[in-house]
Length: 486
Image (cartoon, rainbow, N blue to C red):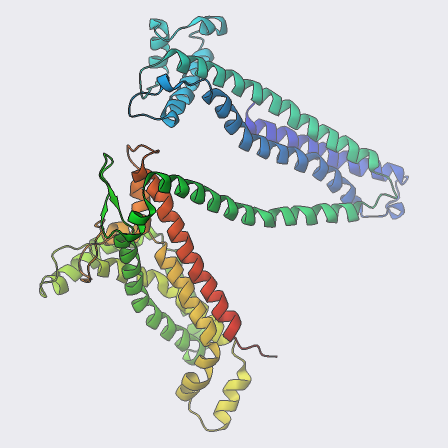
């Protein structure tokens, strides 16, 4: 059964439970709602939750585990001799999935029956015709074990889908029935409903924690796999980035780390002063009418897609810097450069710095301003000597958070800075960053089990640790030096 249809069935059962729960509660109170412990809506809502939430949770868990369990079972049917030279088990499993989908399409179209399908062999012309009609293109020659694995994959998937349908509907019906049986005028439906909602809120909060743990685990496991294939010493100490995908690769992280820090530094050099001056003006000098218009207008910059910034860097900023600065000064002839990406990224970061700093400056108590004015200080002296020192920890935290955003940027760097991994001080030379290389190493016709592909996970882990350190540093600075006012 289609998953969307199954969800609709669960919701229909839950809706019916809602109506029956209200009716049963009202019947037990002889039609007088004053005899009920809780408002009548809570009785229906309780039945609705018990009928829907456990069933939908089972559906989510089943859909998560089913592919892994089926692929583990089917993968055991693939022998080493079934893996083509230069290939991998991952590619063979991709062929198994495509082949299973092709067999499903052939059955659905009536081109072949289940009985005829069971008797097809790898070399049969009929099978080749069926796969061709279904548009299935395999990555290697079809082998007998691969065909049998595809049949098993298809059979297991259908069986699991039927079992899923039966289990989810059964859980929904049982939940609705058990909840209905508990409904009575004395039933504390509101308490049960609120505890259920509290548990749902806690579970939702854990999603973020578990997601973070899953990301870290996936990066860590694949990074360990990479370092089993490529020496960690060469990765951390080499000054060359030269992936070959045919052996002899040099995968040193330093050219990428240098490019990442260089581009981010240029972006922050531009964004921090401009953003901070905007925040000071809006919070201390601008009229209320101007602030009402200017603050949202500046924050629009944060909502512009990064691909648009990339096009702006490629079409406008890059040629401008090349024609008026790089070429006249003899520093380069390319429009793709660190300066191009840094300036455009700095424009993108302005609202991050200005908005956060503005909120922090506005949080400084008015009594400090009044006290400064009372002793004869001018407004500029008050800003320099009272407000900025009081808001400094928060401003530093805002800058570090903006730096984390800059380090993780990809699209602007791709279109504005190029893809050259090198160590150079010239800001008008093309360079690249860690995020760009992560994308390039994982796209295209690459072998997933090779060091040149797995290095993307090691780069991702390094980038994650780097940004984590910046975020932790920002929190430490804010918590250690912030001023708390009554």
